[in-house]
Length: 104
Image (cartoon, rainbow, N blue to C red):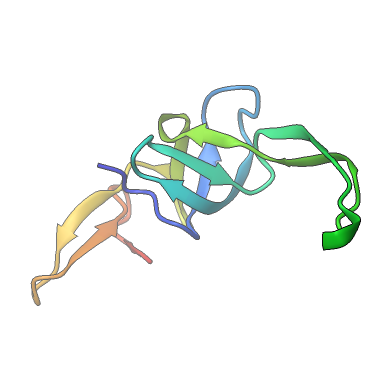
């Protein structure tokens, strides 16, 4: 089960971008991989297409990262493993194991 959602802040704990932080742009639940802003940058060769007004050249863009290589960031504690907490009204929410803050 993935506890990381689009828009969360995460910190990379493994790989060539160790220590970088960024916002999650997308999540692929089937492959358990995520796209993080300015992490795992790769070169992409783009062919020009004048009909669609696309310039050609070498572009840099983000690549997918395994979800096991990142940790969720709590605003007050730092990198954490979240716990799923059931609220009194029956809804489930993610919260910090250290400080107890609810993560949005």
